[in-house]
Every structure is written in structure tokens, then in C-alpha cells.
Image: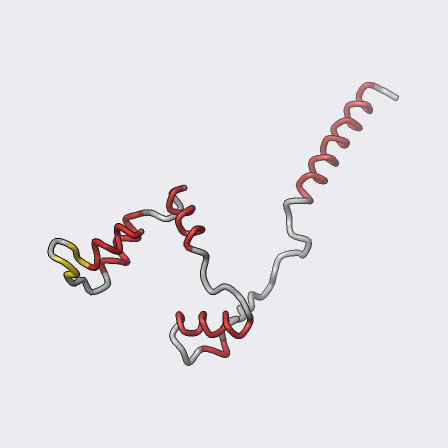
Amino acid sequence: MTDCNHRKLARLDRLRRAVEQAEHLLPVQGPIGVFVHHNTLHAFERLSFEQAVIQAAQLFDAEPYMSEAAYRAELSRGRIQLVDVDAVLDQEPDSLIFPRLSRGSLRRAMT
């Protein structure tokens, strides 16, 4: 076998290994021609989102939201930003609980 043939075989071998590695990262099926979305809460469409999630969780014995510990972990790793938490809290009505302590400031402190 010539040196040229050895180089071709070596290239083909490298290519084969690269394709085998990429195979693990790619989906098994080909491109999807039509996208179909299924609303898993369609039986609860008459309800608000929060009510639907809670009722579905009860019916299917599932957790409707992440745990508080999971939210705190995402907050500490920066996935949830305090500015976003403040934006949500700012949408809620605020009132004084005690002098110099409002409902909003208490909720921010608890977060």
C-alpha cells in the first residue's frame, strides 16, 4: 500500500470517528416537516394559569413549581436576577405593616 493510500485511510478513519462522536449529539429522527404543539393543560383552559397548574398537580400527583430551595439556588448562581424579582414584587400592592416596614420590603427581605 502506498503512502498516499495510508493517508487516505487515516483521513477516512478520523472522519468516521468524528461522525460517530457527532452521532451522540444529534437527534435520531430527521428534520420535522410539521410542528404540532400539544397543550398539556388543555383540560384546564377555563382556569387561570396558576389555578390550572395547581389543579393539574393535584390530579397527576406532581409538583407544580420548583421548590423554594431550587429557586434560591438559581438566584445564587445568577440564573434568576434580583432586578426581575423586584419587578414582580413592584407589581403587587404595597402597604405598611408596621411603621417603617412595608409589605413589599418584607417580601424583598424574605427573598
